[in-house]
Structure formats: structure tokens, C-alpha cells
Length: 195
Image (cartoon, rainbow, N blue to C red; front, side, top):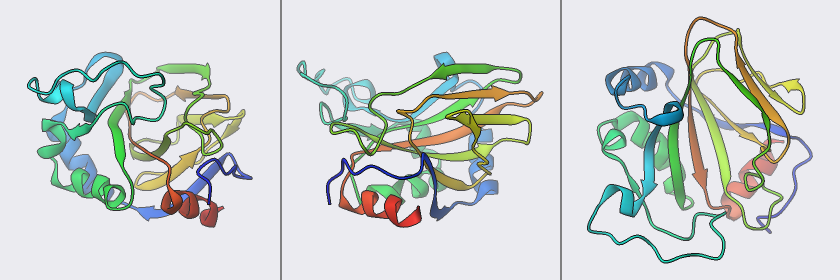
């Protein structure tokens, strides 16, 4: 099966559910000081960013699919056994690249945009899965101008090559875990079977 197979749906809830209380307890230990610019906390990053003895990778023709470097767990992920176990679910089946906690501050908005390399239908791409950890009913994620009803602990594939935007209309932060991986037969079949 080709990793460039298109899905019929732009949003697909996958058959994985994770323990919200355990994830929330671990991010409580990590925040707020570990969040970097744009309210992003890396949990897996390019190897040279984690280990200074690893040289910066040579220039690549295309950085889209994550094959240009090796990826390592950050100290934040190593201190988080349950979050590590969530990531390990996917590491056991495919090559996991970038993993992050994404925080959207109260009242914040992410303007509509597209991510041209984050879709199953793209030849050189990364598959991004989203697991909400902290959210509420005033946080709205719109994909193709339709609300995606993601709940904490669920795991979603979203076709992010399509227009999407986020509105945090609440007075609380929203935190999602995103897991990027190289497309392979396993994740392709898993996504298509969940449609």
C-alpha cells in the first residue's frame, strides 16, 4: 500500500485512547518553564539539538519527511514515563520524528493556514497525529471550516494540508501532544481502517 493514499475524510479518530490523568500529571511537572518560543515544548527533536557531540546533518534537498536527520528523545520526554509510553506505541511500528507539546494560551487564536507536508496524500510527507491533553468546550479546532470534536485522550489524524485554524475562547490553556512519523504501511492501514 502506498503511503500517498488519499483518505475520504479530512479527520479520522484512530483506535488509540490514552490516560488523560497520567498525561496531565506529567505535563504539570514539566510546565511552565520548559515551554519554548511559540509555546512549544519539544519531546523529540533532531539529534544534534539534544547531543552537542552529534554534528549538524549535511544539507538536504528536501526536509519535508524527517529523513534528513536522526531524532532523539528530549530530557523532558525522558522524565515523563507515561508520555514516553504513548510515543512508544508508535515507535514500535514506524519511525517517529518530531514530538511536541503545543500550548495555546487562553484567548489565543491560530490563524487559518495549511501545512503542505502533513497529509497522507503527499508523496514526501510526515504523518502527524494529535492527542488532546488539556482542553475544554470553548476551544475550537476548525478543519475546512468545520469543528473537529477532539476530546482529551483521543488520537486523531487530521489532513493538515487542508485549511485549519484554532480558537481558544476560554480562560484556560489548551495543550495537545503531536506525534510526527514517517508514513508506512502500518500507519496508512490504521488510518484507512478507522475511516
